[in-house]
Image 1 (tube, rainbow, N blue to C red):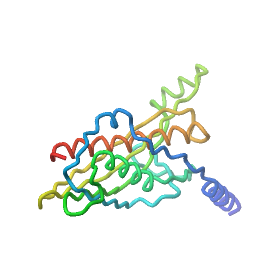
Image 2 (image 1 turned 90 degrees about the horizontal axis):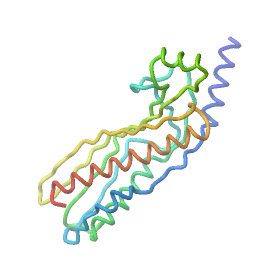
Image 3 (image 1 turned 60 degrees about the horizontal axis):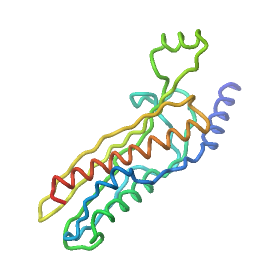
Length: 203
């Protein structure tokens, strides 16, 4: 009983001390250079998110939940992605937020982070025996849908994308930084997919 209480208290301590990530809302320079300005279409942008900003517990690879609480982090992914998308669209469309034309709806269906060691168990053991340092990987995932209504016709694109980075552990400043990098890059991948989708629609 005492052991169960100790584990519960430790888990609570880990959750309550979850670090807050520094979220990078900058847009990829390559994407910015490729923006084609549209000055003819009035555009209204709507953003909806099924992801609540706050604490997030990473999964094992394959989106498998941990048996024991590994700790987590606090994020503002919904706010950050909305901000990035609005900034991107404001540079692409001069008549953004003017009704009577195109309507763009972005829904963030899901967002999560997976993490784990790199390589098989045998490779990890071999690395340890040789005095090497274990390598870990964090990976951010996004599941979103973009719907565009133009001239009475509606087109939808589902975007599922991810980005991974290696780190020296699954806790600490480097771990936090690499997760932030993954989130920033996966957000930019979404914007890139959105840009390509808009181009296919003549926007």
